[in-house]
Image 1 (cartoon, rainbow, N blue to C red):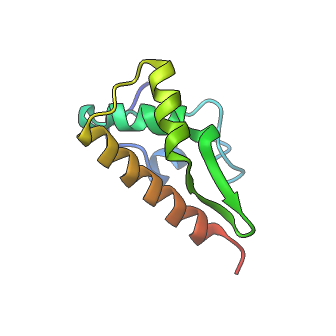
Image 2 (image 1 turned 180 degrees about the vertical axis):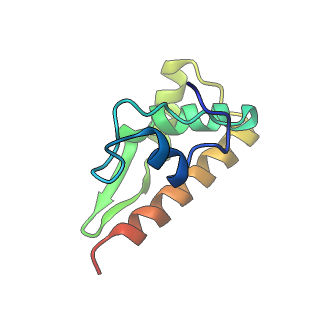
Image 3 (image 1 turned 90 degrees about the horizontal axis):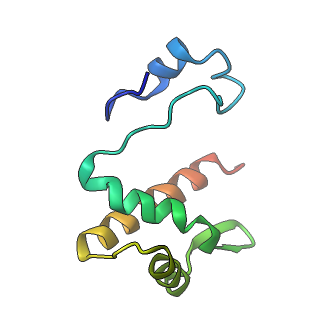
Length: 102
């Protein structure tokens, strides 16, 4: 079963994934992005090797590396794709900061 956008969350995981409390479950379906977010999400996923780290963890992406990787992968970076990518980057960095030991 592939969930529709917006259907995946804690309730969904509790209902369909036995291992939800121990971490990601290999049987859980991958979330499906909304059509407008598909290009930024694909760019984000393909760029994870370009994350840069400092002493406290990830600091952001190496944008030149992201652009080079996108070109090699044939991903067109439009203004909308770039804004979506930066939004995903910001959300990712905020979440990592929230999960960091205090």
